[in-house]
Length: 249
Image (cartoon, rainbow, N blue to C red; front, side, top):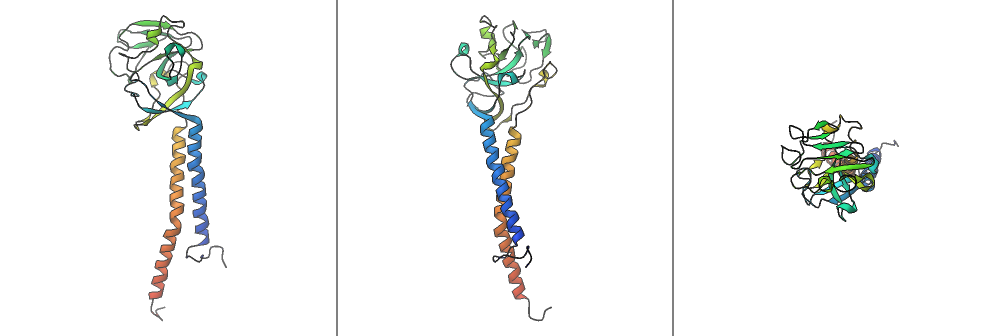
């Protein structure tokens, strides 16, 4: 008997084998995507409105666990520093070690090493800071600002502290990649920082993980549905064959 012959329930052995394989592969992709995401990402609840409108107070974000050395200008990071309080905070990196940060130039923009930075993510357009300032970022440190510049308690508040308001790279716990709830999507890297030395960081693997989960769901549902659909089709064909009059051929 052929290896592609029919099983007792009316659908082919090859079809059954392929549907089972689809379900197995789907389970690997689905569970693997979730497991990969759990290893790479950590969920955080944003405590304040200092990053509005990019991230609002109470939003649940997915942040990629990264080493502080991987952080680039423009990244939105989760960090914890005793000088800022005893809780994780979320701010945007605008300067790294060796940078001179100043505000504001004649058009009201922030400058990094004398280069004006366009910041379309700010809550309100106009002055990039209601308070003028300058800061030299020490090596191994990060200068952090909120996107809601009128009320954000950020590096500007700590300018008189050692490091002129900067925090050590080691204080960074993760880099925000997406807003999970409400589902506002990915947090993009600002292109204004791309022209500076070091550029911007690459997106994390979240999209690839989501694609693996979705592909797994499709394969699981498709593979599981094949059996009933094939059996129903076989019964329909069998019924049609029985209704063919004798001698019709």
